[in-house]
Amino acid sequence: MASDGTIAGTRTVFGFQDAELHALAALPDRIVFSLQYADRAELWASDGSTGGTQRLIEVNGFRSTPIAVAGGNAHLAVFGRLDAVGGYVVSDGTVAGTRQPPLPASFVAYDSGMAALGDTAVVFGCYSPGSGVELCAADAQGLDARDLPETSPGSIGLVPFVIRATANGAFVVADDGVRGKELWYLRRLTDALFAHGFQ
Image (tube, rainbow, N blue to C red; front, side):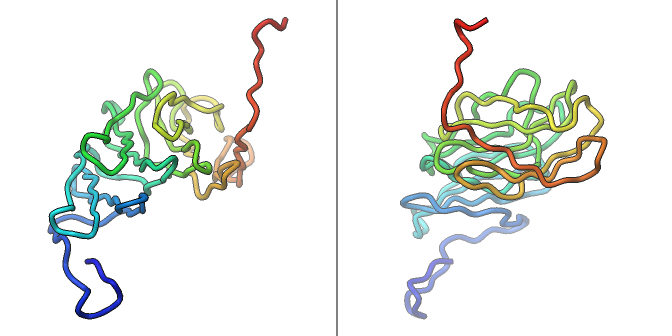
C-alpha cells in the first residue's frame, strides 16, 4: 500500500498471494522489494503507483538476504542449491538496469546477510566447495566481486553472518573453529596498497 498520511490518500498499489514480503529498501525515486516463494525469489520495484510497479527479475532459490543499497543500486543475494549459478542481483530499480554480475570462480551466493559499506561497496555471503561459506564483497555497481580472507579456513561449515555495517566496515558474527562464535569487524581500507615494484 501507499499513503500520503491521509485516509483519502491511502490506496492499494500491488497485491500478491502465496509469497512473503521478505525485504524492502528505498532507492532515490522508488522502492525495491523482494517476494519469497517456496522455490524462487522475485525482485520488484514501485514508484507508488500500480502502473509503476513491476517485477525486475526472478531468481531460483528458497532464501534471500536483506536488500542493501550502495551507489543508488539495490543488492540482493538469493540462495538455492549449492551448485546453482548466480544468485547475486544488482538493480537500479529498472528492468534494464537489473543484472546478475558474476561471482569469483567456483563461488555461488549464500544467505549470510547483505550490508552496504557506505555508498561504495557491499559485503555478503558466498560459498565454494573448497572453502565452504565465506564472505564476498563487490563495488556499488556489483562489479569486481571477490572473496574476502577466510574467517574459518577449510570447508568445515562454520558460517559467518553479516549483521550490520558502517561506511568503513562490517560487523560479522564468525567462528574460526577454535574460539567459538565471536563478533568480528571487517574494516574497509580507504587507501589502496600497491605491491607492484616492491620485493
